[in-house]
Image (cartoon, rainbow, N blue to C red):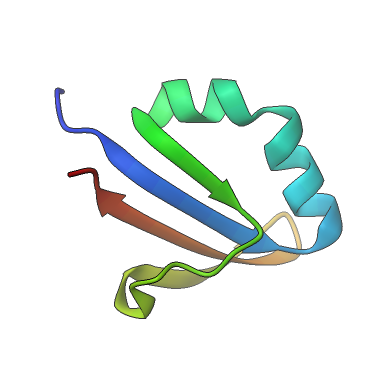
Length: 65
């Protein structure tokens, strides 16, 4: 795969702390050139609500330009 993405994750404090702690690993695994934590995506159509081990989260994945 050669496509790169921009990933946005927002959720509970505990979830965001876990994403911060593993930010580089997550970005490397999903080929993200940008990982924004704690903010809503500028493109609200790109964001989806999910549950991660009982923690509500909003995740947006957009193709990097």
